[in-house]
Image (cartoon, rainbow, N blue to C red; front, top):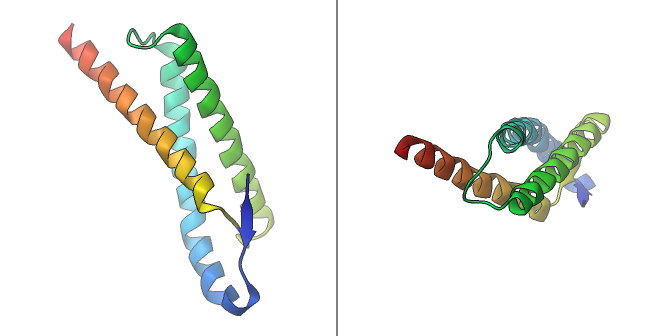
Length: 112
């Protein structure tokens, strides 16, 4: 996982922005990954094979661990360490994928 630190010339503005944005963003990811894990561990998704569901669960657990590590690093550095955009985007893509699966599950349950 790639982290970045702010450059000295932009430190005050960048640090304030990072401190304002990063903690709530990481908390949002933890919230959604927690909900997704709960769904995947308690529901049988008829439109996924057991292997696909296990793979998705493993990817979400991995992302959740990355978010936890990022939160710890952010806290330890007083939000002086950021996260590479590509990492954040991979988490976003995973949440988006899982939202689609949750929507399909709700749709299937409503049709029964």
